[in-house]
Length: 374
Ligand SMILES: O=c1[nH]c(=O)c2[nH]c(=O)[nH]c2[nH]1
Image 1 (tube, rainbow, N blue to C red):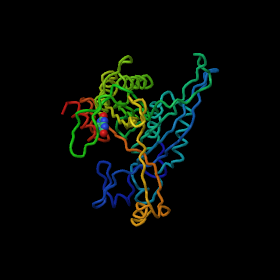
Image 2 (cartoon, rainbow, N blue to C red; image 1 turned 135 degrees about the vertical axis):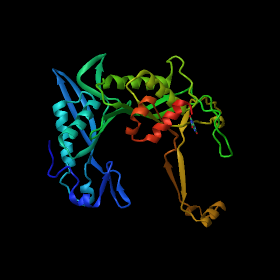
Image 3 (spheres, rainbow, N blue to C red; image 1 turned 90 degrees about the horizontal axis):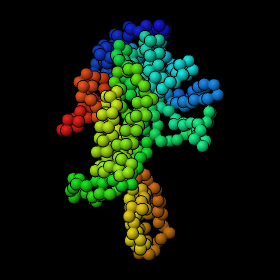
Image 4 (tube, rainbow, N blue to C red; image 1 turned 90 degrees about the vertical axis):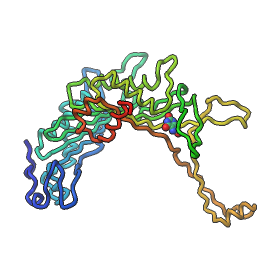
């Protein structure tokens, strides 16, 4: 075991000033809640060859560590610090030696390496995301060494481990753009004097989906197979049957349908969080153009901010038809606001047994309450 230059015990000076309780370093009325560091955006391509057939995994890895003592942070003593440059080299060496059989397995390998090699590491977390390369097909024949990047959702995973704690694995999909052009509405919502939104029984539902789930404690799962199954569940729950779809009364309910389908079909998933960032399409009113428009032409509201550099007098002059030259109008397009919904749902048993290990318990309790119908 590599003990670094320093010991794994808190340094004398630090112990003099700080008492450690449950991983929290305290000084008078201040405490260090977290002190982690690491290397982000370690980007590389791992090429694997089986005869003439090539396989690629292009990934971006972020690995963070928390040390047993925050002495580098509090006292500027670096003897326990594993340089982020070394972290990067370790990740690359593990990729070369172990290969990347699945993102999750590689994240687990990285966590295991830091935990078993360095006794000064108290916590390790690794995030990996994959560039969506797919094998090229020519007339249905898979190409042996050519690939195409298809941005239909980015696969990612996260593994984390505290010393003496279990290895927890998360996985997910992000930047998954989905749209259904009917079988969606939003009606019966709360109304008051600030409500301008019309009720809609037939609208376009479109958004970018982020979905992250926890496998709980790491087991020997077929991560690739499970990930594909969950992706299929997401698409099926969003779209409904291919010949008729399924009505969505809100994006909140669509998220719940996705989560319920995943939890019912994939027993390995313990908790699932879904975020849907909704893109709102406005039906263009074409009455003045003598045309009816049955949702055939829709735009994402381009909000335009008009900045007038003119003073009130300038505006006044302009209104009177004079001084037009004094007015400068700058049109700045700004991104339209979008609705967003985040919901987390998990298994009761998992919360009871493992709830303390979840990083955002409040979110998870909300998920539990929702599942109970509260
Ligand atoms: O499905 C929806 N849920 C909302 O909460 C909401 N709010 C809104 O303006 N449009 C929608 N649509």
